[in-house]
Image (tube, rainbow, N blue to C red; front, side, top):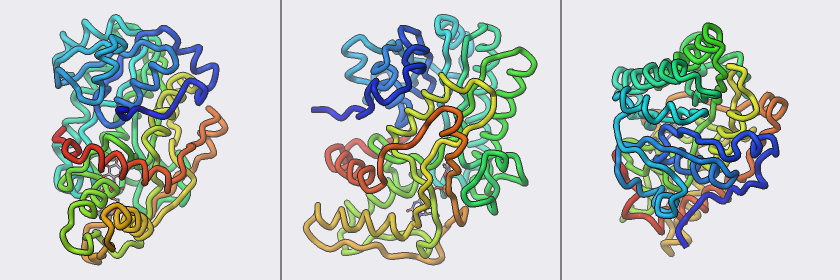
Length: 350
Ligand SMILES: C[C@H]1O[C@H](OP(=O)(O)OP(=O)(O)OC[C@H]2O[C@@H](n3cnc4c(=O)[nH]c(N)nc43)[C@H](O)[C@@H]2O)[C@@H](O)[C@@H](O)C1=O
């Protein structure tokens, strides 16, 4: 049976189900890693997802398209006349389109990442205002936080100092998207929700080692290495809070429905995991699959970025009753299983 999100209607608050039921929802970025899970979850709660995508037959939406459950419009987000025609038919807009990549990609491309994220966003939120949409979701990121932030990190620190320098282009773009969302709420009374998710991982991620985040990069390397070890950047002491894609998508949907206050909410887990533990777990799981010992080899001179990252989950629980449900060990094994079953199509350029 083909892979599909494990989240069902029961996983959502009744108010969220009622809010989205039978509504047309424009899901920008809806054919990608996160967006395709959001589309499937919206279908599970009775919404009508509408997706603008650059690829005519997005592979992760094959089933909903075949079943006529999901409306696809193929075009470019910077073509505002095209976007306006679709947007005006949708009362809810979930903006998740992003040019995103791992640490190295971010470090090398601050200008193009800032440009490629800001340009379509500014055009689309203006169209949404002119079209008087009912609700607009801004999808920010934990990248907004400064290098030496509190651990765990409360939302207030999202505007302090400057974003972690190794992901400056993306961090500033996300700070600007949050500010623009708040400005449209203030000037035009728009109903804006702002979600600030932490490091995503899971099935359908980008496993391209040049561009990917740590978990897909290490899984790809461990599953393809011909030696008995796989390289890891850094000495493994750096830490992150990882959020399984099903919880990530559900967090965006709950925030959109339940917290349109133009006030950022962290979406993540209260778990801080060192990269050494991530690499060990991937090594152990892959060794079982490949039937021989495959271990991580740490390179202390590798690019490492923010020393520590841990999500403060209090506000998300207080405001929208959100808690992540997928334990890290389960998430990692599901991701490696998906990789093994889809290895030929895991490295994608977008
Ligand atoms: C949420 C946010 O997060 C991203 O920042 P990041 O958390 O630093 O991203 P990352 O997953 O690429 O690295 C996490 C850690 O893992 C270590 N690490 C070891 N070995 C590999 C490795 O082989 N590849 C990568 N990528 N990292 C490695 C690496 O040295 C670092 O300490 C933003 O780029 C941005 O995209 C964003 O949205």
